[in-house]
Image (cartoon, rainbow, N blue to C red):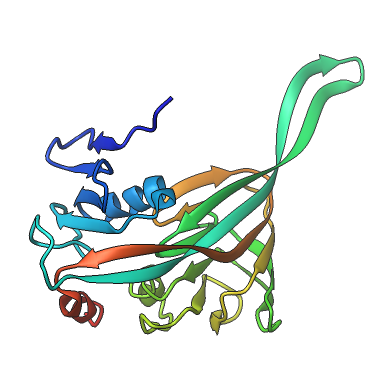
Length: 241
């Protein structure tokens, strides 16, 4: 079966993702549309060109045409691997409910950030195993891992460090924690163990995945993607506000 290369927004026909071009992929909409395009088509190894038609146009271009002075900028994603236990009730037996447990994994990649935690009342035990062993154990509502390009989003709102675009590091912040979680770490494989009585959520670039019985998440370097900017200086200016 051939891969579907064109998607229209289900709520707005003027917004779309078009991967039919030989040299680049078009995403018309807001930043979310571009992030969806990257998620769907990063494997094609083509540059992404965003056309502004949404409420948030941080990464988007005002013109629908690529300028002769356009700049192609590479960004590194975060690879996220979630390990969890799936429990399936096979029905009642003489020995009680027959619960079958299977360990499974799901993988994602994030352009901006990964948020891992619970709801407003959650109190989760975390244990972070990073290369420099500086984060360790803490309790709280969640943890946020941001790339340089994503550090002006939820990371900034959480008083995290805004990283220069040239940086490959990650900014790590905590949500409602029993101690201050503000770190900048190298993009090395990092394992986050957790213990929670309730299901936790993994948000990848704002997309929510509720997963029960999570054992750990592992983050590491993801793919590189290229984004086309007609006015790269304007993009850098937006990061300051």
